[in-house]
Image (cartoon, rainbow, N blue to C red):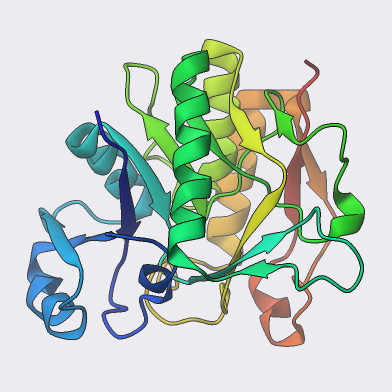
Length: 250
């Protein structure tokens, strides 16, 4: 089965940045938004889901079943950073052919290893990169760029609305003991916490708190609650009271 590169989107018909980064992207939207997305994105295939699939987590469950094998890119991903770059090198990739090759190479490795969740690192700086460990079976994927080879274990709990990358990383680690993470590349987002549309309607302190405690309840010591953070942007300070990190013991 060929890998599909799918961009889930919601009310951002004029701001699908990720489509410029890959070859033959598919944008997945609610049926009621399809006409606007086709108008603003005539170069992309538009696949629709029923309007009663509301929120990113139900959408991921729908897409996994519908496409079977896919890479999901958030619509606000605008560049790929190379964490292995040397001083003076550009450290970013915007060429669609090269990025598509990077995605397909990781998918092929996941197929060889029979791994069902695969993706890229959330590390953002070359100082976080270990040149002796550029792949991992024990580190979580970043939520804005990861792929699925669907089977019965691939499932997002729809009781939460946020932090689904933590859920699926922990859940698949529990069910299958392996997730595949490429630690060489970071898919960077543009204005995650201040960009209208997407999850903006759901993201607030209480929803963050509820999702964090729900995930902590299920996965215990693998989830570490961190202190207050503003995600590096003062204007988002009121949105994120605290955050979490994930570390597996094996």
